[in-house]
Structure formats: structure tokens, C-alpha cells
Image 1 (cartoon, helix red, strand yellow):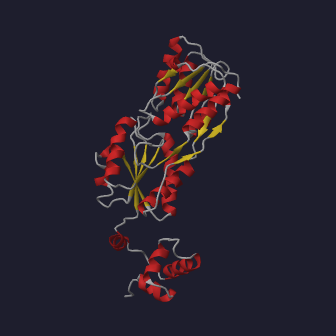
Image 2 (cartoon, rainbow, N blue to C red):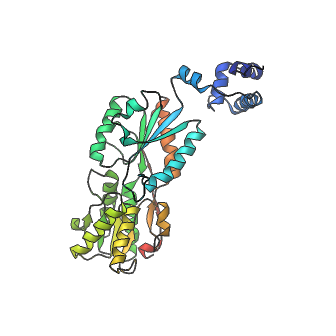
Image 3 (cartoon, rainbow, N blue to C red):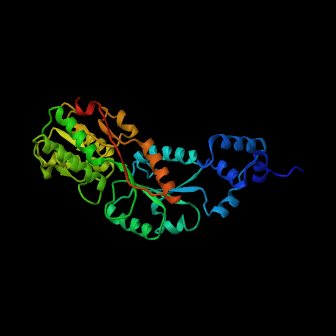
Length: 340
């Protein structure tokens, strides 16, 4: 019976060392493209399969990344914010491109992510998506940093901790979308979303919103900010509070698309026309945003770029390279809900 080919057989035929074969089969940039293609062609001809267990024992790496999602309240049973669903695809593709497997789980399954994943050699590092109340979540980040865990998170920049984040420039996005609505002639604004350290991304969007109002000589009325966290139901309740307050408003800037969609339902139930009477805008550009009635004007966060940055930054950290926080430039997506 014919013996299985080994990396030494490939090295012999290619005229290179066994370590060069290992690097080439991992698509390492340390091996030039011509040599890498030659080695991979020989491996294919010999029907060579990498013994991942042996490779991992040698390198102390398992070539797996753990993606930990926060369990969000949703209208279905997914418990995943729809914004993160689109990012999941780009993270999966980026991992595959780098030759890594992706392990997906929820953050709340344990109180010790480090022991569950990196210490147990299930994963070389962690990607964190979502966090609920940031004030509580920060304790997890401190613990992960102290334990030396390789991790990167999606979210606002963390200035008081040695934590690397990939996120959107939320201040810029909040400012630009408010400026767009101001240009449509609206003057009386409400903001639906948290404006505190419990939700830093929403807070930055609110700060950008307020800056746009100031820049255009409009009043920043703190009584026109209504708390809402993440969900359509929260947006619906916040809009109901706004309407019940009796304050004049002709525009709603929501901290997320889901909050905006909930607000639109509250307005429609009271026969308040969008955008004729009230302009409504969101943030995220989730898939459903283009199918609301009217279609929702929003701020796009590029999930493809985000997924690639999360994976590449984490792998740089695992490989001992210096990493830093990166903020993606937001993009306005203008639709009918803002009365363009």
C-alpha cells in the first residue's frame, strides 16, 4: 500500500527545505510567489494533506479564531443584531483567505472567555462583536488585557485601556446625517438613542448630531434626547415618549436603523406622515433599511472592510506585530425617509 506523502517528499521534489514547504502551504508572504505556487502544485499532485494536529503541536497555534457575539434581544430567535449578521460573512471570508477556521459562539456562555478559548488552545485569539451595557462590559476587557489575551473588538475607541478597536467614525456619521436633514429645511430635531457612557457608539453619534445643530445655529435641546437601546421596540417606546411630550419636532435622528424603524411604526400609528411631516433617519444601513416604507435614509458602516480589518488586526497581534485602533469613514445613504 502506497505511503502517504510527507512535507519532506514535497521539499525533495521542490528543492527547498521542509520549513519552506510549511510556510508555502500556509500562504506565508515569507516565501516568494513563484516558489509558493510550485510547492503547492507539487503538494496537490502528491495529494498531500496538512496534519493540523502535528502542525499545531509544533507551533502552539490552532489556526482558529473565536468570534464571540453578544446576545441581543431580537424579534426572532437569532439573538444576533442584524448589523452583525452582515459582518459575520465578511469575517468568515477573511479568515478563510488567511487559512484560519472560525469558531462562532456567544459571549455570555461563560464568565471567563480567556480560559474557554485561548488558554484551552481552542482559538489563537478572539473577535468581540457587541457588548450590551458598556460600563459592565469594560470589566471583561480589563481582564482580557491583564491576562494577555489576543483580541480585537468592534466598537468605539477605548482611550483609557490598552484595547484595540475597529469601528466607525460615529461622531462624523452623526454630524453628516444631521447636516443632510438640516439641508432639507428641518429645524426641530429629536434624537432617539442613549447619550451616555453606557453606549459609547450612540453617545458619539449624539455628539456629532449636536455639533451639526450648533454649526447651523439651531438649538440643542437636551429634552429632545430620548433613551433607546438597540431594538425596534426601544425605538417605538422612545418615539411614543417624544410624541406624548407635546414638544414640536419635524425630524428624528435615531442612533440605529432598528431604533428608527421602531420610531416609524409609532409615527404611522398616529397618522404622522414620513417625510412630509417628520423626517426620519437611522444609522448602520442594515438590509431591511431599504425595504421600509418609505425607504430609510441612514449611515452605512462598511461591513466588508470591517471584517477584513478585524481579522487582519487580530492576526497581526497574534504574530507579535504592533496594532492600533482604526475608525472606518461612514457613508451617507440617502433615501426617501429624509425627504430628499
